[in-house]
Length: 173
Ligand SMILES: CC(C)(COP(=O)(O)OP(=O)(O)OC[C@H]1O[C@@H](n2cnc3c(N)ncnc32)[C@H](O)[C@@H]1OP(=O)(O)O)[C@@H](O)C(=O)NCCC(=O)NCCS
Image 1: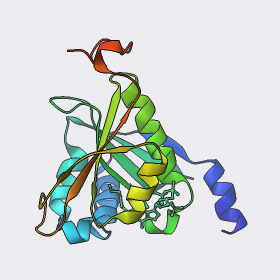
Image 2: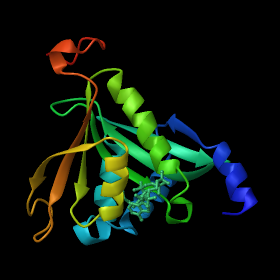
Image 3: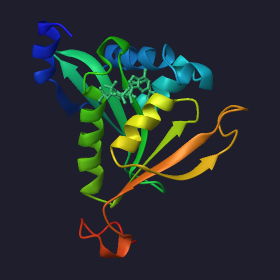
């Protein structure tokens, strides 16, 4: 890593944004051009839909104004605390941005509920390793869930049983 990159990463910021259309395009393109979404057959329009759904919370990581990654959370409806998507631009991977986005998401989710859920594709071994290192445990395997021949593995990170959770009282509903 060169000095400029090292310097920049110190100033990564994560913020919630109602994304402007060009920013939606940047994030959607980031997904469409990357695994696991290539293998999963996710197209541009579906990515835009997820990024702009009013029921989702989108947080972006920026370095000097450039979007370097993003994370999408589900904080409404039946599956509160689900991390729908996390993605870092290829040129910025392996520099801690993904971990920072995940830490930010966990803090946000654990302020309301005691469980964070995320799915990871069976072929995405690098991401599985990252999640394991961050304390996520396998809940189960959804075989042939998105495409035939690959599973989605549901993971959970927890800080308390629902009944013991002292957050803002949503957990025990
Ligand atoms: C997974 C991802 C968000 C991690 O972000 P990051 O900024 O690269 O992660 P960090 O620098 O904080 O941590 C590095 C870890 O990320 C994982 N990682 C690195 N490159 C990866 C890649 N191309 N795909 C998946 N995981 C990757 C590795 O586990 C790595 O740790 P290691 O030292 O054990 O190899 C990012 O690599 C990415 O966007 N990958 C492609 C999309 C993806 O797989 N998203 C997750 C879907 S569940």
